[in-house]
Length: 112
Length: 119
Image (cartoon, rainbow over all chains, first blue to last red; front, top):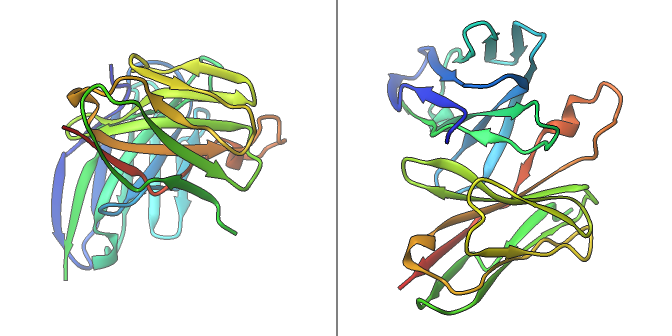
């Protein structure tokens, strides 16, 4: 079963607009990570937020985490055509296994 | 600095054949993982390894075998390929635990993937 579920499944915006993607998960976690996947490529790590953090920033990325609602959001500000990709949340559950559980992803299309 | 590589990048095989997908990393990362990616399922963990000679099942291990005799290699074998194993396979690695305050030890680094078609 999937730990993380992203919403929306697909998102199309204009360059310069902000993009917000949401992720929900089911069990307690150590941390939550966001990855990007360009078409036909492997995943690239974007940002990690620990379970005791509520918000984190990295460049144009802003991640929030609400452990009471078991949800996270990824905001990409001032989007660029190069941000076109699929975005996945991944959770590191408190099992000691260090294996991540990925959601099904949000496909982001940024129109130039 | 090659990082993490997978071979072959594309493979077509017949039902019932044995096929091995290779994964090699140059960072000496302790942890290595195999995922498969199918439409509508995201990535699902097949097997992972915490160190050489230590492996464990993930979410979808049936029909797969792994080994880890060397830290840098983590081959995945489909013992008797089935059409349901048609997928894109990704290998990943991550650093050792215990690096004080280092959230980077939780990041996973992915290979470019192997697209496998079973006919």
